[in-house]
Image 1 (cartoon, rainbow, N blue to C red):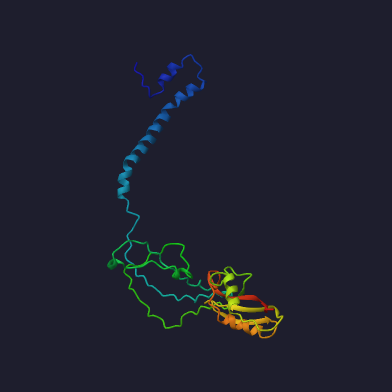
Image 2: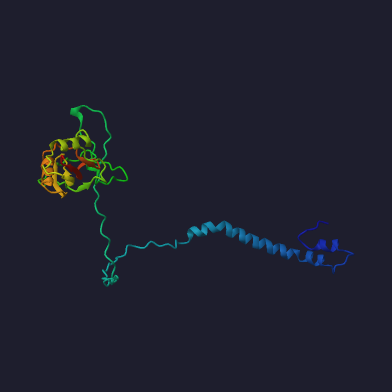
Amino acid sequence: MKLDIIKNQWLDIVFEGRNKIYGAYELRKSNQKTTVRALIIGSVIFSLLIAAPVIANLLPDSKTEEGPKDIKITTVKLPPKKEEIKPNLPPPPPPPPKVDQVKFVKPVVAKANEVTEEPPKLVELKEKKIGAETIKGDPDAILHVEPVGTGTAAVVEEDNQVYNTAGIEVKPEFPGGIEKFYKFVGNNYRTPEEEGLKGKVYVTFVVEKDGSLTDIKVLRDIGYGTGTEAIRVLKKCPKWNPGEQNGKKVRVLYSLPITIQSAD
């Protein structure tokens, strides 16, 4: 006898003499319906998968091309922007003053006809401020020469102060020394012919920058024309070596006592 496994005839043979209440019997008994249902569903799904591309090609495209549209542009005038009122701010600081700068040129030995620019002199650098960095100039710039000014030259004040011999660096001196000066006075002074005349005549004078004696004054004399004679002698005195202060010749006040003693 040939059995068809699709039919349920073999179930009775397999479960003959066994407990058919057991769940396996019921599962095997309903297996035919489950198999047929699964076969139908699988066939439908397989058919849909195969036919899906064909169906997709037959469907119309959802993206429809839209034709050109007339766009009208309207100008919209916006309201004016409100200007913000700025608070009262302090004025900006003034620009820094311009500072004259002197260009330093590296000295190079060159022929006389090849010299184009000279380095600055020390006199030009006295009141100039040297820059903190090197500023490159324009080699193609046009050279402008300012005309020579016609202003007056600076006047150097001359030191006409009369110094004292106590605080002078270099004291004035008679040529050959003070002993020769005393000898000159003694040889030229004419003592009045007055018996018993004795004393000192105190005189002062200024040794000028050129060594001449000026401003001769008699501070005290003993009479009989002794002071006038002292002035006469000093006026014919040779020029002295002038005094110096800070390396410059200056005027110096000098005092001189002349001892008078007449012959007995």
